[in-house]
Length: 481
Image (cartoon, rainbow, N blue to C red; front, side, top):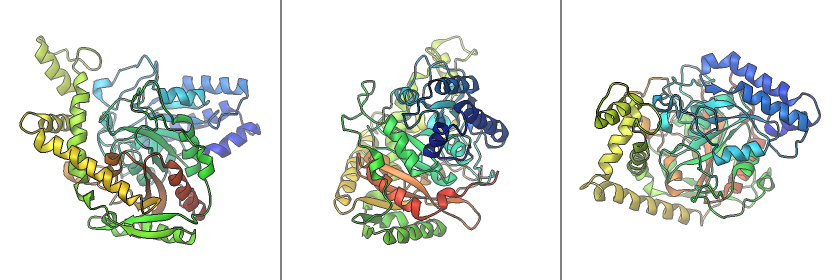
């Protein structure tokens, strides 16, 4: 019962093929069997999950599309009374006194929380190696990274430890691990899903979205968590459409753009070949394919890292050893408390972010770095808007490279940052992107295809992704644990 999609799981629950408690227990057993190897979970909420499942069984109400569906949350999403660590020593024992708004929406929809999953510390990373609780491992080959920062959520879905997960995406952190683990990952438009209760990395970039087994599942989850929130002023009062209406099996009348910069230097041949084979499938489904250009792509990494690290250095200033989080016991003076608490509590990548961001915002450098990057960001957004006048969506690789071995890039921050070169532009522009399984390398490592569309056009992503999924079988392949 643990390898079913959301829809098939709920049909089985309605038909009483198994109870919600039996289903939940099966997933908890799967986590116990596999997580010592995979390290996808930081906290398993067994008592909470079984209590929620019993409540669903007693009510017998499956009117919500997520009723009775076991899932997990990336461990930066606040849960009342349940530890939320951001995979950092700084918050190792932090228990929030409230729920993130998107978690309340999931609870209202009947979803069941199995636990909190692993991430790069404060979501800063592309490999899930920066976690205080150790790296998660790719279920397709446990010597390899699962991608990051939402590595734990991606692993949990790929390894059938959950039906779905909620990750966060600041510069590719849902789409890239979805690609590396061969699951579906949606980065919604900025403002589509509330950020309230999600521990921030870079507030003008952060988004939350589903990681699922199928495109249809992603549409079902977004239906529940999307929409304006009175708890988040960055959410937008734009109606949430019925996403199921976009789940068609042909692409007649759709124009798909291939940005030439996303297939150039640095993109591994196996990756680009797999995506181009996917493009051939979409042609047969009736799509018109055109080449487009996004010349500012070459500035994406420096622009993103200046802006994101600047916002991070500001957001992380709240962790001072006084209000909450890790506090040193090796200091007497106030300044010493600040310095030692932060030095002990933060890992290397977070310290790097604070130093880069503080430098970019400092007097004498603000105009040269932060202000210039903000202007480039505005131009990149404009460039995407012009391209979307010519096509409905863009098709590209998610990552320029295949999954890499654990430890392979740990001592080369620039090489690690370049893994995000094809995903960060979407965050800079605030638009939406979807990763769907599109192939396996000769060595059996997953390859994802990225579908990108304009603001609040998630429906187009679902249409393209669902049609491709129905015409291929990549989403049906499973890692052999």
